[in-house]
Picture: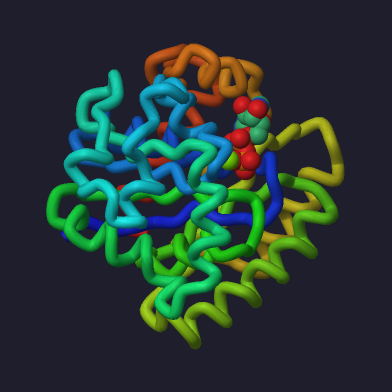
Length: 254
Ligand code: ADP
Ligand code: MG
């Protein structure tokens, strides 16, 4: 049975989407079957693996609404072993529709259940909020992976997020694990970045992955070519870091 990971952080621009794509791509290169689920109506993950807006239907909205089944919603990417369920702007309407329903936290969980037999890893990329879509993502997951930028406010955000996750553990998903926290967009020249890494690592100990993702311009260019970094520039520092993080996740069975 495959394992479902949710990439979550209520802050935008911390590297959720970039991490889901690139860790997923390296796990696929290592021979695993990986399904990326775009659960943000901005559709950044979808376009980052080469799905253009016009191709994004049926996608995750149709899947959770019962308008499409898994086979119809899943696309193959140019990386063998790496598939995606895309999202488009129609997903933002789903948030409103879901709020009014009784089983509102479990739509994604139900929709992805059959995919666990077909994929080794399922990665859900959440929007930057703790709204109903993110709650669906966390409720569907076996483990949460938390990307964190090395900034002062990130620490406050992290304690808020962990509190929300504890709440969800109690209410909708008792077996949820914290798969781990990892640092993104690290700039070794700033003292603050070094200090954040030191403090978070001292506090969360083994929950913190040892790989740190550096700030690297190639990582920000790759999505405009619809490619993971493993295909766009496999030699750059960002690529090496994501490969190493993917191997940590693989070896930990995180
Ligand atoms: P989120 O999904 O949390 O909103 P993204 O993954 O979309 O964050 O990243 C935000 C922006 O930063 C994107 O433009 C992305 O290309 C860029 N980016 C992400 N990680 C890095 C990195 N390590 N170095 C440089 N740019 C990055
Ligand atoms: Mg994103």
